[in-house]
Length: 355
Picture (tube, one colour):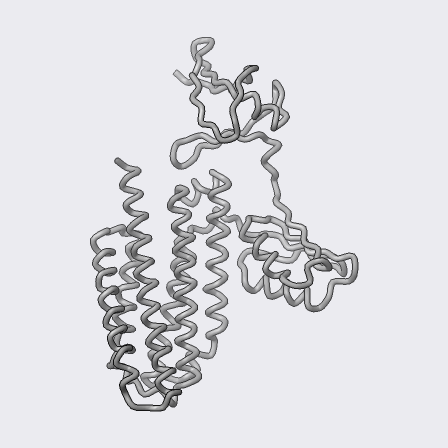
């Protein structure tokens, strides 16, 4: 028999802010199930008989109850750029990550050129934001991307592709390909950072709104681990960028042969990282763990080569650039190991949920 759910307010049912309370279900009329709500919660939300409340089902199967008053349709961040002349972009990024649908930058005076430059830079460094109003005293930026429309794996894949391309192009240049392959290092780094910010914005939305959580097909634990993956990939992007810049700036002085360590480790690193990313979907624990073990061994081999590097002959400048190249490749291996460990955590969590 179908049971409708009615939430009934009963006097004298206090519930402290951090308490965990069990309440009995009651059946009335043979088919209606009733549960009482805490008196304090009713008062805090200024609810009365006949008011509507919102019930959302979480991916875990739990229900979350909220008052309509607490569910604003749009989140607006108001930033006075006259008061915050320094650090404006950081404040805008903070509003973006917090899930602001509208970011309003305003000033009693005319908005300065520097402020407009900061706004343009913010738009370049984020995804899904667009200027709606561009006035002398106010710039209004709105979100045009629904965080539930883009799966988290899309950003992970894009970051992986950009990182791999930077590293592989660096190696190809050392093998004799035109240095023009590295002409857009800064743009690729910017794209990696933008994808990290977008993914963290989506994760924040999934933690706040069960509807987003369901559409993204993640639970809270998995969403947070995706944010951790994004941060790791961003750090990998930093070292991929550093490697590309080292090759671009020191190509003539680099004497390491591509078939020698540490450059010979790049194809091995790329192979293991590809296995790890692919198994975000196939979810094979053994394969991920094996890739992690091989990366640990590869990192150890690079460390051993670094110890011997300083015993060789050559100028200090050359040795320093070669050490920095080795360090970046070693860090790429280390962060790939962290990536694998997070995936193992996620997959084990999934198995525990299914027991």
